[in-house]
Structures are given as structure tokens and as C-alpha cells.
Image 1 (tube, each protein chain N blue to C red):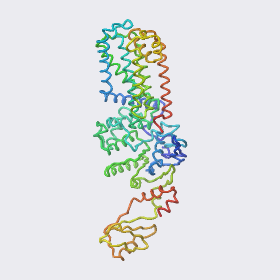
Image 2: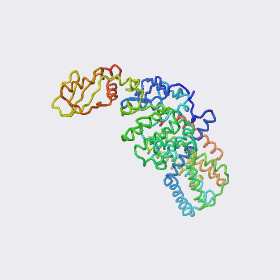
Image 3: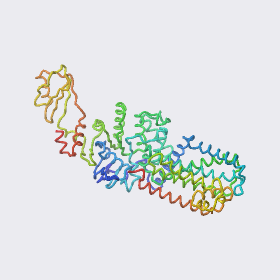
Length: 317
Length: 271
């Protein structure tokens, strides 16, 4: 099996008609078997990047290779490697669920019994087999998302690209989709994910790139990225209400409700010291939790300014 | 080197077979589409043609008598069949392709390894299938009013097929450029319908004053209808059938490569 990266992007530029420069020469490399997050605010260039990879957007410059196959020179072979789940529903709502998936298999050259077998396999995996004879318009939002995943997988792609796959689905379905995607990844499928749910990226992905204003502002492992975060905030639910903010120096504390306290802990500070000061102040704690998605703090820090690692460290630390 | 994959076709023959499967899939999808909405696609031409036959043929036609030496009802049948083929082949491809663009379901095809020629071929074949299906329905209905005789099968079927392909290609190009649903009804309403009605479906060109007759020869549908009528009765007026065939075939080739070029550029599809 080839050892080429699942996705290799070099110097990718896209200038739209009218002169808007959506991508300013990005480089990106996603290794085989990775679970990769591509994050960025709206209009940062995520969808343009995915559009170029899937040949829905014509690039202005640069090279893109899928498992070593150039998308310009070996487009058919490269495309066979990719499965795409777009952000918006893009199937005919009047077609039957089974037909939508089987037709997609046909577009990849899988005909007859093989197409039917693959269709059944993925409709069963995604819990849609019972709906195969229904028109897609009768499906719920979550089912429609799963239908798009089944359709993207029907030709057994090596690289699955999901653009906001869990947008608008409830928590239960989102969790079951996470579980399914983890299984796919463990079975060897490389997955690239864009999402607005940063918890989703933090939970699923091993590596991450953050794109902003058409440039990659960070490309590292999730663990290294999160280590850059200098401060964590603990939310403490207290046994008794407080009338004022206690002095917990050197820690910074804020009272958000009468019986709720937030405490910032910098890198290198000790959690035991927090409790020692709480004890000394006579404050009893019923429970504690981490305040928010840590990745979200980083993301905001990186994309609020011009976007550099230096900015991130200052902003987060 | 691509990675090993049981679903990856290896070799030229396998790639050809995969492309053929993609073509067949698209054709089946297109046929399924117009059959699913048969009250919109198959019934209206049947009803309108039945009305043409009844009013122009059976009721008014009796008073008109003969046209170019033929019973009037007999005279209009080939033109009416061709009119159905032109409008339905065109409408099928323009509507189906534009709907696929509008719903973005075309993206599922664009991200696949299906070559542009197969994509184009699949949509055109769908338009031809609907054109021929409607032609068959209209012919069967005509058989209730006249005895269907075929003078030259080759000319009849050849012109039928070429016309269906040509107007399917026209519908495809229209669909490529269309941004809204209005854009796919403008050409049929303001170009195709007038040209068809003035294309010698209901009258022989000899009846026209010289000026109008000369102008009619600039209408491409005149050649299509006259050649098709020749296939039925061996009569095409002063329209040369061989030249008509060549002209339609040349237009098919030009429209085919124009469509491929537009697809290659991503016109209306890729940003």
C-alpha cells in the first residue's frame, strides 16, 4: 500500500471572479489514517479548500494530491479515493433513499449486484435500511445527514471529508454519528472534518489545522494545541451562598451566582492550592467542572486577531 | 501508484466498464425521473396532440381538404410527432439538469470520477428517451386517426434520433447557463414554439408568399419536419433531405463539443 499522505496540498490559491482571494497559498498535509479537523470562522476558506479537493471549485494555483494521486492529472483515480459529505443536503428529495445511494454507487462504476450490496451495507450501518423505499423528503433532518454519509461511503473511499456533518442534529444523533465515525477511522478510513462544534473536533480529531482569511494559522496535533492554552477556568458549585467574592490569591476568582464561583488556574499552578485557600476561607464545594470547551478559547484567540501562534500564546496565556 | 482497493478499476477495460456503468446509471436515473412525474411529462403532450388531431385533423381538416396532395390529417401527423419530440427532449434535459443544479444534487455527480463526456451523454440519452417515449405515444394516438405508413425507415428513425439528440443538447446548454427557473422557459416559449409553428408542421411551404417562403428556409425546424415527413410519405417539398441530414448531424457535433467545452470550463457548475 502507498505511503503517500491521504491529502497533500501545496501552495493552493483561489481567487474568485471579482478578485476575492479566498485561499492565499495554503500548504496542508493529512497522513493516512488520521482524524483531522479543519477549523475556521465563516468565510475563512474551509469550504473553498474542500471544494477544490472535490473539484467543485477550480483552483487558481497550487497542487492537490490524494494518496499521491494528482487531482488534475489523475483525476478519476484521485476522486475514487474521496467520499464527501457536504454541509447542505444535496440530493433530490423526491428520489427514494435506496435509489439515491445506489445511483451514487453507479457513478463510481459499481453496477448491479455490487451496487445493491454496497447500498444495503451502508444503509444498514447508518440505520436507514427500513427507509430505503421512502422518498428522501420524508426523512427527518438527522436521517438526511445519515443518508449523505451512506452515500459518501458507498464506494468505500479511503478519505472521507465531512463538512459540518452534525449541524442541526440533536445530541443523541450527534453522539451516535461520532461513534460511527470513530469506527470508520479505526477501520482505516482517513477522516477530515470541518465543524462549528469545537467540542466535536476536540473529542474526535487527533490533528488540526485552523484556517483564517485564506491562510493556515495553525497546523498541529490536538494535544499540542491544547497545551498552548495557559489558563483553565474551574466552575465550583458551592454548598452555601456567598455574599462577596473571596480572596483566593494568587488565584483569580469571580462570583457568577450566589453559590457559584469561577476560578482561573494558570499553567504551573496547583489545584491543591486552590482547595487549600477555599478551606481557609471556609468555603465548601459540592462539585466542580471545567468551564468551557478549551478548544473554543484557542479558536477565538487565534481567529480574532491577525492570527499567529505568537498572538495565540499571548491571548490565551 | 494508487493504493490497493477492491473497488478501484484497474486497466483501460475496467475504466471503460466503470464509465459505462456510470452512463447507464445516469440514464436510468433520468428515465426514472420522467416516469415518476408522468402526469407532467407524458400526459400533457398526449392530451395536446389529441386535441391537435381532433381539431386540426378531424374537424377543420375535413374542410381544408388536401395539403400538398395529402389528406390534411395525414399531412400534419409527422410534424406533430416531431414537434412533441423537439419540445420534450429539450424540456427534459433543461429541466432535469437545472433542477439538479438548483438542488445541488449535481454535486454528487461532479465529485465522482464520471468524465464530462459520460455526464453529458447520460443527460442527453435521458432527453432522447423522453423524446422517443412521447413520439411513440403520439404515433399510437395518430394511428387512431390515420393509417401510419413509413416510406423510408432509415430517414424516419434517423431524423427522429438526430432531432432528439440535437434538442436535448440545446436543453443541456440552456440548463448550464440557467440561474433561475424562468431561464429554462424563455427559449422554449420565445424561440422553439414560434419556430416550430412556423416550421411547416401545419402547412406546405408552397402556400406561402415568396418572401415568407424564403424566410422560412432560415428556420432549421423546416428541414427537420420536411425530412421527417419524407420518411413517412416520400414527400419533402423542395427541402433536400440529404442536406438536412448533414446539417442536423453537423449541428449535433457542434453542440456536443460546445457542451463538453462548457463543462470543462465549469460554466454554471464550478466556481
